[in-house]
Image (tube, rainbow, N blue to C red; front, side, top):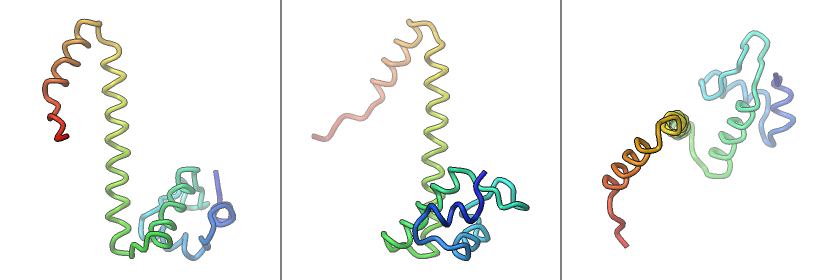
Length: 111
């Protein structure tokens, strides 16, 4: 478990105040609010938010939209991984049928 001080020490240009603002806005959700326990994922998210604001110039209204989209992408990737794992457990002939149907549905390339 990481503390506020750990995050501030490891993510450049992030202050305790800035981190607390992000927590209040719900952009970062500590594991244990009472003790301000942060995960490695929270630290990575703090670095992402810092980059979105400082390096890419997004403002306070745009950041939550971007974070939501990024969260959706991560959720979809997790769902696809679950689906692929389930497909791997199927018999080979069923996997071949699924692969054929997916291939038929793919849109043609525009090149």
